Length: 432
Ligand code: AMP
Ligand code: ZN
Image (cartoon, rainbow, N blue to C red; front, top):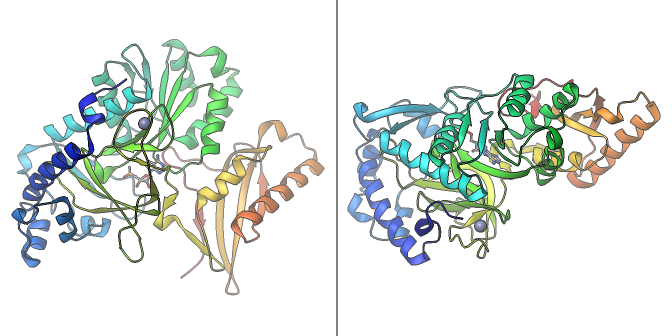
């Protein structure tokens, strides 16, 4: 059941002890970077000042802008010669943040991923098809190394080339896939096109999905079509990548590995801590990274700690599925809306296909939301009355949830532009 039982089921007081030791070492290491060296000097913070875990609060929060201002080497805490790999975030605008790893950083991250996959139930006998980008993005290589460490056979398929993906699954008896949720839904249409039913014609039994927000309904759609159990995987490049938090077989939240990170939850407006159970922005401190330790990093991801113990026996706390990023939030006519709210509603309506886009426009000082929704293949029969009924249902369902009335345009199945990586759901044409 466990990859590293002692660590996964560690008693709370032992965990606190381990965290403190690692935190002290991390702060000491960080002080050698030019960024933290400068900050610590300005604020008269000394590594010895960290005597308890609550002393972490003496250190200021770090955010993406700090990483960008110090780009590329300002956070580097070891000599450059000790670095064996770099990765970067998948940021599509502006400069991406860069993270540097020593061999020991890579080894620990690899173990973290093996732990996640083993926890979900993957074993040595599995064939693992990794459909994530193998490049600067962390999703591909992170899982690749973890799966090899676990001993599974890895098919480094990378993303795209959908027909070949299906052929690989059939030819090599793939049992586990790692895939971006929006791509998993897109792939369903290709399965239909080539006449392959993953439930009958493949040996798939499990899928790991992550890298972008998705609802429980979307997970359910993927589970139903593929006939697999789907596990949520969370991570971000600044914290090494995937493997930060992962679902166990109980599937009630993701265990966040507290031997590797100190977890804080804050109110993103006041920056005050919020108690377990309340929603907030996740703030993380790396505890076992040498190359580029980051202290109190504001992830911008909104979630909450699920109070209580998990029946699986792991003592690391659980976070709820990510609701969205603070910078994903749309404000329309004074109402705050997250794309995932819209996705959740849409995925529940029979007749709605696999993709949608949200377009925001401003006319005469008034904001409008236009939602382009793909119609499900089986619904796309040319019956206009039926389509109009579907359109109206979507408007009404959304109106009751997001409190504004969007314009809904139905479009043909599989017609909206797709990206190979994370889905881009919102197109904001409003000018500041
Ligand atoms: P990157 O640094 O490019 O890997 O992007 C990391 C970001 O992707 C995170 O901060 C989240 O906003 C998002 N993300 C990653 N995994 C998940 C997940 N399982 N659910 C929701 N969002 C996720
Ligand atoms: Zn559990």
